[in-house]
Image 1 (cartoon, rainbow, N blue to C red):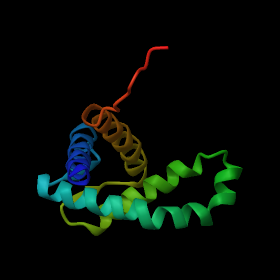
Image 2: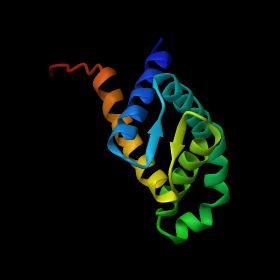
Image 3: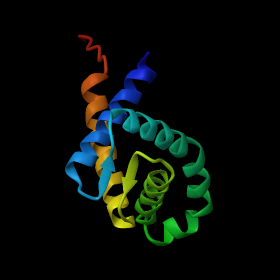
Length: 120
């Protein structure tokens, strides 16, 4: 159940990014659901392989290439899906950064950690 809720939250985050950035377009909520699913699959399976292959470049740029890698994944998903478009590479980098921030905020609001405080 938590996986489905997270999927919907990522779609809402993608709709928020499309609302905030003029370079990102999502046709509707169904397109956002598909884009969130494909982004999740790409981030789970493709990005770790690319991160490992580009590790020397990431170390050389002190980790800044990781932003480029995230932008490339976002741009690639935008070019594959019909209802989700990204106008350029730099829009994709900015959108990937904003998408991760909004998704993290939404997930932290919905899935609050259950902290148990014990007295000494």
